[in-house]
Image 1 (cartoon, rainbow, N blue to C red):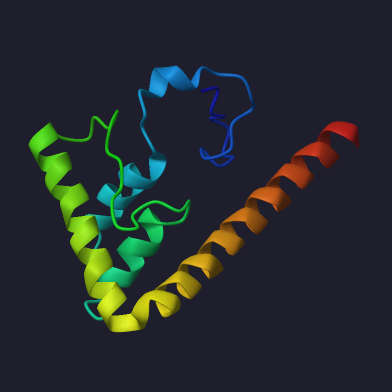
Image 2 (image 1 turned 135 degrees about the vertical axis):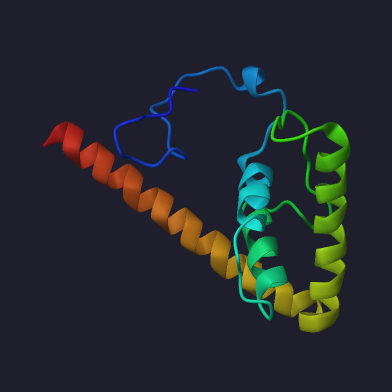
Length: 127
């Protein structure tokens, strides 16, 4: 996917690439798996993991795991199931609108950061 390897974010490619090579892989699921290995505060662990999984609108309640090679299919399916159960717990805790509001804040921050990175990239090319 032409991801740069010079210190810039891996989530931002230099264009081109062939999405079919990803076989449906979504980085949110890989990020969720990696974050699940971290020691996170017990009282906010569910919320942190959900917001990572949902930052592009997935994990409401399911998250696709196709194309992920970070474990055997049985483990990946189990982790995707955990995400759905986490969503249910958070819906109960925050209510559907409260959880959606928190997700919207994270999505807006992600989009803002992407836009800022893209603008800096354009400026460095023209400047």
